[in-house]
Length: 213
Image (cartoon, rainbow, N blue to C red; front, side, top):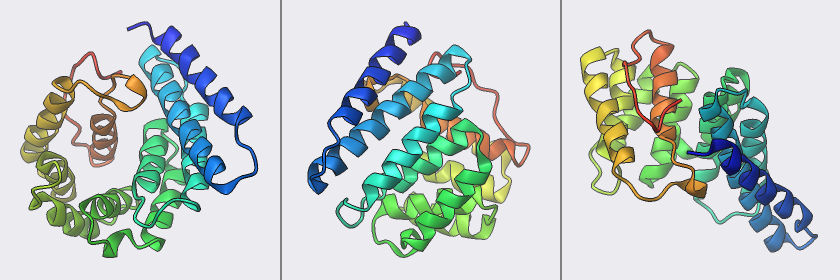
């Protein structure tokens, strides 16, 4: 991939969204979401190039959080995105703050599997492994959520190295066979997040892929 060219495209999208923010609440919310997506793409491009991605991934988290106020109820993608961006950036302090925000917004009580996934991620960032396992188990049994993602989080919580390896390798395989990625930036972002969480428990798997840094 020409990561430099993709980075330039994403930063242009971000600046264009910035220029279109306006004062109308609906249009502002849309442009903030667009800017968050573009900043995410730019940060992932930097990561794949081996550069410091903290600034752009931090912008993604900020824009998604700003856009959340005007989003429909149950828009869990924004807090999840913020947590993931900050974990990938290695900014664990801000990731913990975003995790507390997601839980304060009710992710742990959500009936949506995406909400409960957000709660599992939040608990994992905060080192609440009982909570991580509880919410991961809630999504593992659902037909409308990728079971291997829930399995990977549950295995991290249980410190099951073998179980985690099988689950995260399945998640990576699902990324390698898909055709669509957010912002058309082909990176296995969920795998990177899982590996970062697993590394905190000294159980990251040995993975190699064109979709990983």
